[in-house]
Image 1 (tube, rainbow, N blue to C red):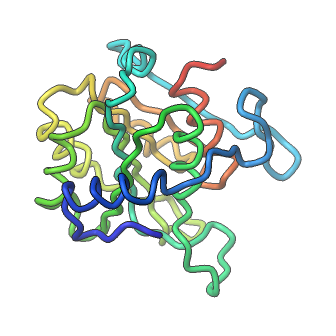
Image 2: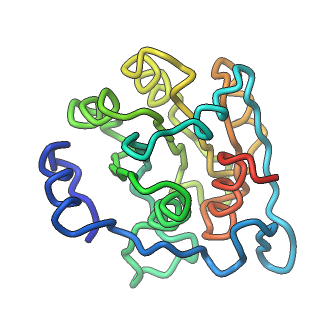
Length: 203
């Protein structure tokens, strides 16, 4: 079941306890520790971790929550009949490594709202995904304000991992103020799997 944007943290926790993990523990088929490929080649990726924030992942307790904040975007395939959330793949890859994952979608226009802030304060690690699903071959226009709000709410930028899901150099430069940033080629399943491998320092 896809998460509702207006569902409270308490309601989701109760639902998770009743139903178990939302995603099956599986990889995207390329192997958890092998370099994923896309269109016959390796996915490109840049990473910066100026404050060694990724070390927190290795010290998580079983009860610690990793929160995914990801925007509503169309499938990268462009198939109008596929209305599933492309970042479900990110949740699956994370759940294959850690059991307590929360996935809260957000709208790029309204940004990080009060309900998202509740989840941020209750989570150990926040993975904020920035993506522009409307770029259509043009330079993506990510909203850096979402990152500022997330870090301010978390109160500690070492808890926030920013994933920018496009290969634009401009997007990378616009995130210079943030210590932990991973830039994926796009938000395809292979690219998201590789991103999670970097988050868990498997390379």
